[in-house]
Length: 312
Ligand code: UDP
Ligand code: MG
Image (cartoon, rainbow, N blue to C red; front, side, top):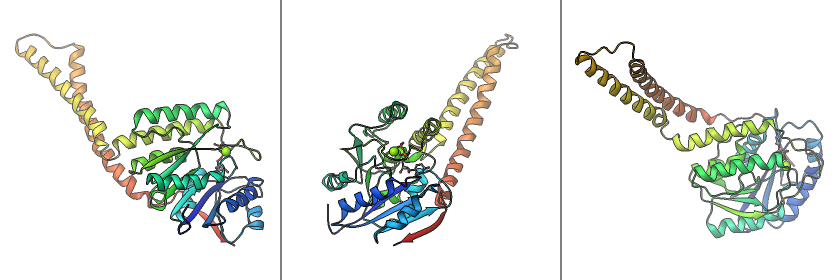
C-alpha cells in the first residue's frame, strides 16, 4: 500500500451493535500507518449501533445516519458519495469480511492497474439458502457477459475513486456492483480473501431477497445489452413481425388475384395481426428508447435521505 494515498473505507450498518466496535478497532489496526477515513453508514438501526459508534469513534471516523432503512445498496451509495479517498474500500459491517485482506487487495490493484478489485471468498461461511442462489447468479453472469468474476456477492472490494463514484446502485444491486462497473468500462481483478461466519447479530436477508435479486439481475443484464439502444430489442422483433405479416398478406393477395377465396383462413388473421403487432412493437421501441434516456438523465436524485453526518 502507498502511504501517499488517502483511503476511504465505507461500511453500511444495520443493527450491528456488537460488531461496530470490533470493526472500528480492526480497521484501525490494519490502516493505522496510512491516511484513512472510516465512513460508517447507519441504515436506520433500531438497536444501539449509533450510540456505540458515537461512544468510541476516533477522529478519522465519520458517521452518516440515514433517515430510514433504505437497504444496503443505498447505504453504500451514501458512504461513497461522502468518501474523498483515492481508493474507496467497501465491506460488510458484520465482521464476515476480514480487514487484514485490504493491503493485499490494494497491492493487487496497483499491480494489475485495475479500477476495481473484488474478493473471492475462499470458504464462504453462509448457509445453502444463501450460497445456492449466488452460485446460479454468478453462473448466469459469467455466461451472458464477458466478465469473468467468480464471486459477485463478496462485499469486500477496492475501487479507484472515480470507479466508485460512477456507480448507480438501487434496489439490491449492490450484489452486482462488479457488473455495473464492467458496464461502465472498469478493469476488474479478483483475489482470494478470507470469510468468517457471523459471530454477532443476524443476517438481514431472508428468502424474500432472492426474488428481488433475480429482478435486479434481469434488469441489469437487459440494460447491459440494450442500454445504448433499447429500440433494437423491440424494433427488431417489430420489423420481423411486420415483414412476416406482409409476406403472408402478399401471398394471400396473389391467391385472391388468382381467383381463389381467402376468407375464413387462419392465415389471414395471422397476417393482419403480425403487421399490426410489428408496428406496435416498433413504436414501443421508440417510446422505451426515449423513456430510458429520461430515466438515466433523471437519476441525479439520490436513493436515500441523510439525517445527520457526525465527525469526531
Ligand atoms: N445492511 C444494511 N441495510 C440493510 C441490510 C443490511 O446496511 O437493510 C448491512 C448489514 O448491517 C451488513 C451488510 O449490510 O453490514 C450485509 O448484511 P448481512 O450481513 O445481513 O448480509 P449477508 O452477509 O447475510 O449477505
Ligand atoms: Mg453478513
